[in-house]
Image 1 (tube, protein in one colour):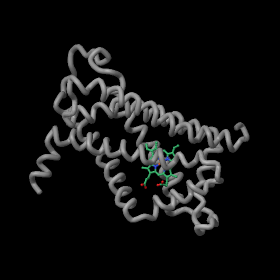
Image 2 (cartoon, rainbow, N blue to C red; image 1 turned 60 degrees about the vertical axis):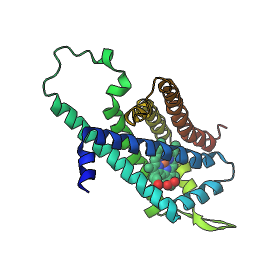
Image 3 (tube, rainbow, N blue to C red; image 1 turned 45 degrees about the vertical axis):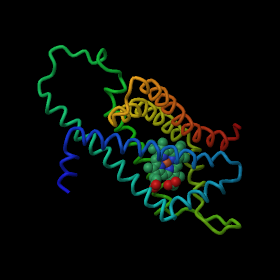
Length: 230
Ligand code: HEM
């Protein structure tokens, strides 16, 4: 396995791992978004609850979940390792440093943006994932059987304005993180090409706007529905 540890400790290996885990998390986000869109269904939360049960009890999904946790942890650890390595290899700051002229703001702020996304994920997992797995979620009876009413937990959370504001701000942060991360991952994987780079940039920008906007629309919709504003 020494080739693997050698590959993972090389500069390119670390960047490849960041890119691959980042792309895996992008795929996770698409699936997570589509599943959570069931919150918009006007059925008292049945479809959402059945989906949540499927996601937390199906063995094949469990494997994907474990891959998601590993990807998040590896993505975070390797971002720290790369940052430390870059600082060490440039101990003396450039005499003239005009960072804003050399790179865009999002690319220079990936560390801060990533840290904020991580804080969001930890709070988010505590609110929903931890509750679903270990909390005392009320049971609801459907024709298909009795299951945990996670919809109720989501409604309760998104009935509070500060919680909705937190999600909306977090989704803005996620949008900026994705807007650089998406194209950067393709570049690292060597898929940058004079012909395809503009297309990758356009898809990346569209993805970074559409996905967080749809995620943010869920707490806003739930808040408005709960308070009779719809
Ligand atoms: C407002 C939008 C969102 C809602 C309503 C929502 C809801 C949920 C719920 C109910 C769960 C627990 C049940 C399940 O695994 O499906 C969950 C898990 C999770 N969420 Fe979200 N989520 C949202 C946005 C996000 C975002 C933007 C991220 C990442 C940046 C994220 C990351 C995760 C992760 C990593 C898990 C654990 C997944 C697993 O165990 O496989 N969620 N979410």
